Amino acid sequence: WRAIHSYKPNHRSAALRNASWGLTIISEHSQQQTQQQECIKPSPPPSLMSENEVVWEASINDGEPSKTPPPSLMSPPEYKVVWEVSNNDGEPSKTVTISCKREWSPLGSDRFYSLLQNGYYVNDAFFRVVPGFVAQFGISSDVQANELWDVPIEDDPEGVKSNVKGTVSFATAGPNTRTTQLFVNLVDNAQLDSMGFTPLCEVTQNLHALQNLKNPTPQSSDGLDQDMYMSEGGAYIDPYVASGSVSTIASQPSPFPQPLSLPSLTDPCGPAMTSKAPSEFRLRFHTAGGDFMASCSRPRFPAQVDRVYNLARLGYYSDDYVFRVVDDDRLGIVQFGTGGVPSVSNVYNYESVEATPCSVVEPQPSAGVIGQPMESNLRGWLSMSTSSNADTGTTWNATAELFINTRDNPRLDPLLFVPLCYIGEEGMKVVDGFPSFGEVSELGGFGPSLDKLYAEGNDYIRSNASFDGMGLINAVTVEEGD
Image 1 (cartoon, one colour):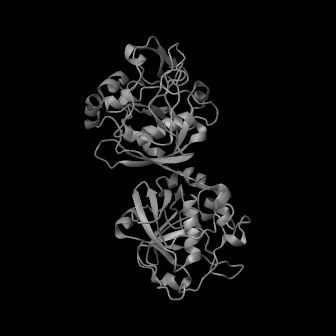
Image 2 (image 1 turned 30 degrees about the horizontal axis):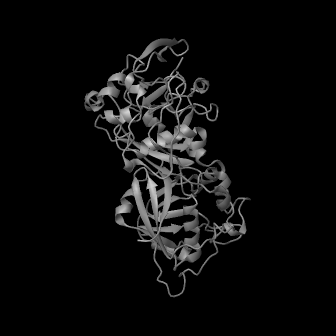
Image 3 (image 1 turned 135 degrees about the vertical axis):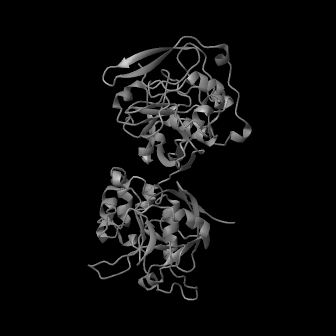
């Protein structure tokens, strides 16, 4: 039987009961194909096409000739998607982040990425919510979009990634029938692994929001009528949205690559990490609360700016938690830069055995390069973090951690905290939105442990419910020129 079904026209649905869960599960078996399905689907408009399109033939194993799906983009090896999920009950929407890996489900990842880039999931509804099992979505309010993408792709190999809690998989109506519908595993559902359900993403921020979605059919596990939703689109689903009985993805999910160049990042002495930064460039920080831009100038502190430039372009700050947000009578900062991947971040942890002499940026005069104006740690400036080393007595051990001054902190200037890049007031509105979880535990607070962040990476944050909702830098991209 198929635990997660997706609508296919003119299919016969058979209700089966899972004895262990007591849930009514729908299995769909193909009965016949309509004349419309035998036709080749229209191609998307030229504006949706790209030079890196990948087109594959999808066989649905029912004796019909293979069909050509709409042109598809090849997804990046890793990318992230940010959702704003609304329960449509007057409460603020919740930000949910999912991370996707193409190696888990290559064809599925390409299809999902293509759908995202083409705006398919705008205001998409969770039409089926089964507490303790799954939350299902992926039918557009645009009837034409449903018709355009109703061309199946082949299955991916099973067993690469299990359907554990928080993973996202395509729904199917049998072998090689994946089109647009997906589901989020609200619990561990390893029993689905051998049934053709191959996860392609996992929720990495705010799974709690998805576990509290509105259930539009609390008396049934079937969900809303997929046939009506597919054929009528918004005319069918909009009344449910207006009444607050269904949850929706409130805005267009925006995918972006999450590159991580492991060989280059783990060799701080290598050519990639010692490349010279442009004289002027910008860092665009992608976050769930919006993007913000930092304008950087190399001349004042070349070694430090080179380090930040190379870390950013090689993906170090992708999927990086904002682990420290302090605003008290002594300090006002937002700090990040542990990287999230221990095999990489510990190369830049000066206390780690994996660190090398190149891991620490060589100090420069406290006034910066002679002849260059010195900036102070005032609100909006991004600076490199340092700390004292009790063994060596040095106060300069800047490696990869950064902080943003959320208020004027001039007392940090003589301590070799050097301002490198400036964030304007519009961008600071995003920075001000990062939530605080208290001072880090090593400094006597109740917040996260910096030592555990380096030892366990992002798993430490994600496995601790008390840190749910912690700010996350999804990616940092480097922009040069005008």
